[in-house]
Image (tube, rainbow over the protein chains, first blue to last red):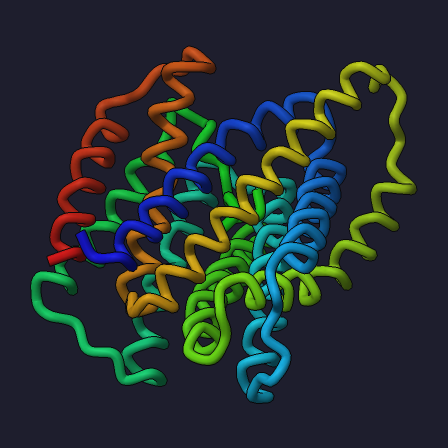
Length: 152
Length: 143
């Protein structure tokens, strides 16, 4: 099994668990308070990483901007997904719609990074998006994890 | 356009772009440093949300309920952060954004299975089909 796939599956499993733990949290406190503590946990984890791992300091500007923008985009996405659910959107529709986000990543990666996919991989990406939509449909609302893709 | 639709489309835009910028960053930084910079990027929103939560009305929220809700949220953040590290590492070790993003977006498959086991939720036929397709997709994306 290729290394990248192992790591991708680890991310998938961990984010999948957050779908349940986040629900256990928002059953007790508001989604805003839950998100706040989610963010504090990220800060705590980063503090541990900072202490135990030597961070790279000499980085290209584009790398720093992209990485920082990544945090902003992901966290803002979690926040807008809450707003979608709180502003009258039916959960199953909102979450199914949001599940389309990898489609945009694929498009951008092909257009901007010039990534090339085989026919099999293109079929796989399409089926993955259909699968994510089907998984988000009732009757198991736990899939409301925007997850970490997180963040909640 | 209804507001929920605007927020949903914004989410697609934000998360869809996240996959792209993560790959750009991963070409020049290790996963750990990427996570540090990522956290720096979410701090402004953390400050904003902390402000909104400080004005939240909390009648009916018992200290025990609040404590366990916060603990679950904190645990969610730790899992999410370690998941981020794995996601970044997948990109660092040669995973294409156009493949890693669809694979990791299948995380609801795990949520659904765990929700059945631990939260005793029911799974409908569409979700079983979704689970099956998820495995098919991972296979196709990995060959």
